[in-house]
Length: 95
Image 1: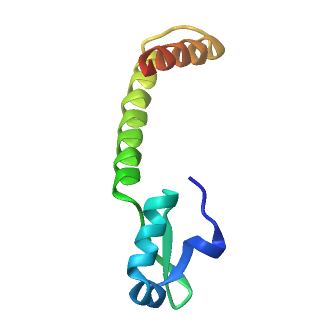
Image 2: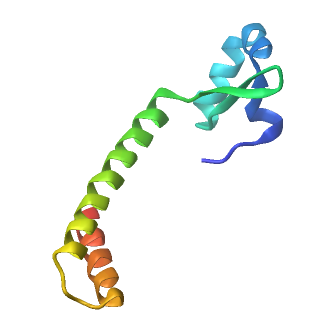
């Protein structure tokens, strides 16, 4: 997910004036819009479907981070072998 400075950083005033247009842009591009107040980032507006995907990805990463940590802690392998084993398990569980 990338941000285009010309399209994706807007003031809260612009959002008030062009709410429908900006929401349409978010839905069509699937990119977030950073909202500013007095020139500073204040909030991020994200399409609901994209938000749901972000939450799912975060939860999956958190789950597999715990699993990888468990594998490494329960192992007496060398560091390189621990990392390779953890990555293999992570990839296997992703499928």
